[in-house]
Length: 322
Length: 265
Ligand SMILES: Nc1ncnc2c1ncn2[C@@H]1O[C@H](COP(=O)(O)OP(=O)(O)OP(=O)(O)O)[C@@H](O)[C@H]1O
Ligand SMILES: [Mg+2]
Image (cartoon, rainbow over all chains, first blue to last red; front, side, top):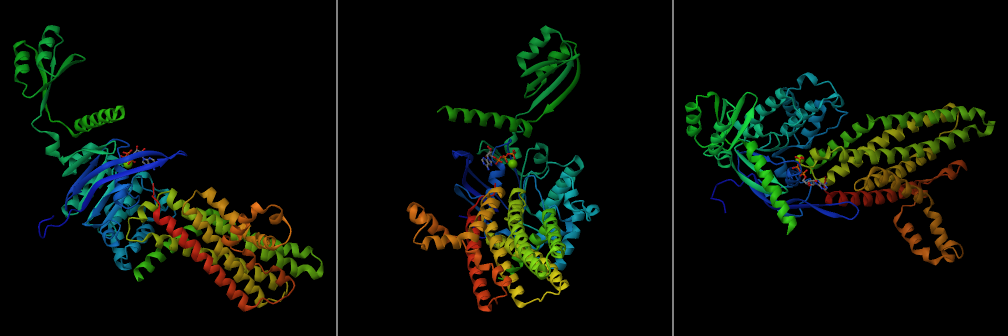
């Protein structure tokens, strides 16, 4: 039960399962195996997972494109397929493709009509949106002549035509050049400032790291971890990387005893130390070795991602063996 | 309610726009009109009394043939592309009922076929007028009947393509069209005292199912009457329109039911 007056979660996915039947023998493939999570109003929620993890399947189920095998999806506390809920959602599919015989204005006008937006208002919004996604210069071209990144921008514009409260984006930054990525990221930051809820999936970890409040990591159709970046990345678990100018085997052996890893890089050697680097630094200074660099390393989302992927694969293997 | 109508019309007009900008449609349309002009040339070769007959015959055949081909090809392409190219992914999550999408598609097809039959009819009537042929109401009535048949075929195309692949949909739709043209003969054979269904009684149920399910498209074919200068009664036309509408409503409803359940993957 919610507190009186507290708004319901914007997205509430409970025990979602989806299996597909493929081939002539209708072999069952379980794409999503019981996922539950909630997204609160105003959150920027990152949905992270390797290829084939089940991100798109989960998102499509939330958007009513596919029906779950079991489990439920509620958006804004209501049935996710109700028209009222849908007026408040903007959705960008993975690798979007649009009516390529239309021009950007025509296509946005079409989508605007589906929302019942009045004509003059449509015109005003389209003008603004095209400017915002950086397509004003390409207004008179049909989408057939658009590049992949330009289509992605059309996709973002169409997801925002109804000024949605919840924006769901399946890999919004794929196919964009670095400048395009930054521009789209800026749009997401603006949306967050306007207290919109954003749910997006990505492989690009730095983007997630840069803008998400909370992250869920999914693999093999299961949720592996969920939380704020601070919770997931264990800031206390820091390590330090030291590079120094020496290949003295005796010294390297001693350094190896107190560090996680030692390797040679050309003229240099490099070691990674868990926790504080004092002991190794003293060894090196005492040995008269010239120290090239000392870099503190926080666990990155990438490390976590790889770690979770390996853990997932191992669990999957164990399940199969049983 | 009016919002639902607006959305359906948005889908319809987008469908229509897509079709008229489609190369297949433009190509078929050009071919169809060229075909009618060809009938003019051909009529010059005919003996004196037969000139009008050639144009009448040819035009009637061309309007029907190209109408059906366009109904099948475009009906299949328009739904198939929406799903295969995944533009449907951006439509379903919008505040629109799935049935509005199917009905909108069908209305867009209807507009397209009005354009197609209208254009061909104009060219056909022009050709008849050039040859000083009398243009009777019966020709107009025959056009209405052809149009009903074409609309019915379009609804079959939409029905099949709402759940199967374009090639299969095309084959099934053409299959239904061909069976529809001969199903009255099957009916006659079922009632006959001799013939296939008496010799092989095991086939009877198949014949009965065909007669029950497949619309009898011969209803819309009044070529014989036209050529023999027999009048086509208005009440017959009205009854035939009713027959077509009833089938179209059934086919589109079935398409909606199938479309309602499917996953878009
Ligand atoms: N239509 C389908 N039929 C059969 N299996 C499917 C279908 N769609 C997805 N799958 C399977 O479900 C699993 C999850 O796929 P999904 O597309 O959800 O992954 P994803 O996390 O979005 O991957 P990516 O990062 O590559 O986009 C995969 O193993 C995939 O093979
Ligand atoms: Mg995906």
